Image 1: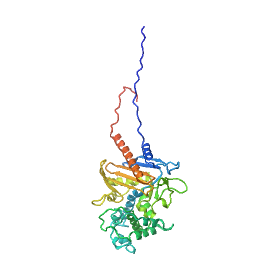
Image 2: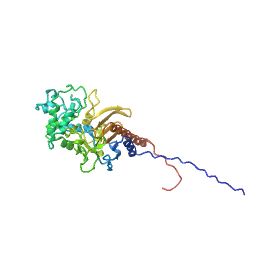
Image 3: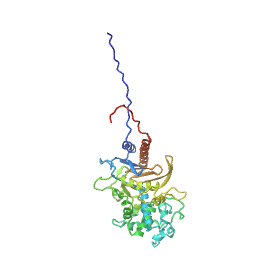
Image 4: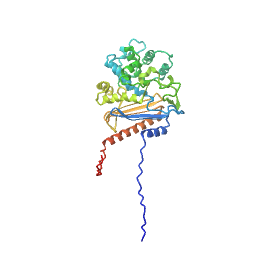
Length: 383
């Protein structure tokens, strides 16, 4: 008998590589740019489809960040301030053509050249104010503890508007935090209420934003929230860890990512003409820049090849944090990223994070567009 030799045949199975998760990709960016923490979320149709936070609350410490932590939004809060002002306009406390002279005409230090500047021009950075003067910010920061914020803001009005405007016709956009501070001071004088209370009544409470406040988040006693960093050093949440509260309306808000998403969803609904918590036409007006401009009221309005139609964008930093948001109404997308350090590398890292979140939205779109797998007939009667 001739024996039969069996030859084993080895079939190489393809190796399936699992793609990195959003968290893993964000952490790679965080490490590459040497940041303490990086966080972000993506929304589709007003719903969060991805949300992650990686890194530590303070460099040199072990406390990890979480998606429930509070993050400083910087000037991304300007869109919130414009929305609060619009609610005051809607109920008649102010009008968009209310002038500085109508509210502060009795303040001796306010030069007559400012009297015709309107509330709308203040929030569109077309008031004639120059870039912020550091000496005015220092004066606000060094005011005595316990000085009411309304008093501080009126003092800022006196300091800033005692100097003539750069131009008086509103023809140029000059970015100025003082414009939003003066707009808030106008609101306080007309209502007799402090700006922070107005924000809670007209924006935070209606949107159920419970994890939002002003100034640096967290406590001095423990690292219970992320801390901003300057030069790689964590800064405890004191008055030196943020801009003066006299310019709260310009950007001292901190919030959880979920609370920020509630506000962004309201603006996304309005931009798409869909029903939401606020009148869509009113928010759309805040999203439209003046003719020939690209800055609306708390929003940059841009065009990019990855989305049809206008895109709403803003970034913000108090030099210890960096935040950025991109919104495409046509795609029904929102992407936001934040880090607890400032500077150029923070901006670059957040841009990279936006790209990762955009990839996730594209992946979701592709998955939704792919047909379901065909059913394979096996001949089995089993159910």
